[in-house]
Image (cartoon, rainbow, N blue to C red; front, side):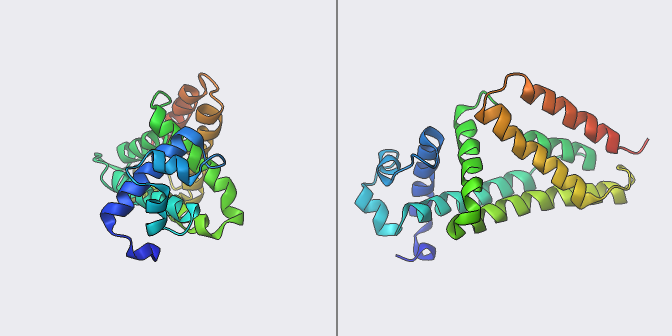
Length: 197
C-alpha cells in the first residue's frame, strides 16, 4: 500500500509502536518483529501497510514532526523572551522521562543515518527546519519589539538548536550527570545576554 494511502488511525497506531520500539531498542537493533511486539498487529499486518521498516520509521517521524510542531506552535508565552525560554525548555527533554529520553536518543541515531538514507532524511529535515524556524521567528519578533539586541536570528537560532540537539548526545545518550542542569543554566544566561538592557 502506498504510504500516503495508509489510513490515519493505522498510521498513528504503527507510529506509536515504532516509537515504543525505538525507545527500547534504538535504530540499529530495531526489527519489524520488535515493532509488532509493541503493536496489536503481526509483522505481516505491519507489512500490509508499509513495504519496509524504514517506511514505518518515516510514519513515526511524520507523526513526531506534527506533534513537535503543535507543541512548539501552541506554547503559551507572554512575549518573545518567555517564548524563547519555553521553546528551549521543551527541547531540553527531562532526563528522568525514560520514554522521551529513549525517543530523543533514537532520533539522534536516525540523524546519523540520514546522510545515507533518503527515506529518513526528508522527515528529519522537516523536523529540524520547523524547530529552527520557530526559534528564528521568536528572535525576530523580539528584535523588532525591542526585547532582544540586534543579533543574527538565523545564526542565533542555529546555535540554540545545536545546543539542545547536542544535549541529547552527552546528557541523554551518555548520561553525563549534571551536564543537563549546567546547559539549562548556560542557555538561560545566554538568553539573558540577548536582552536589551
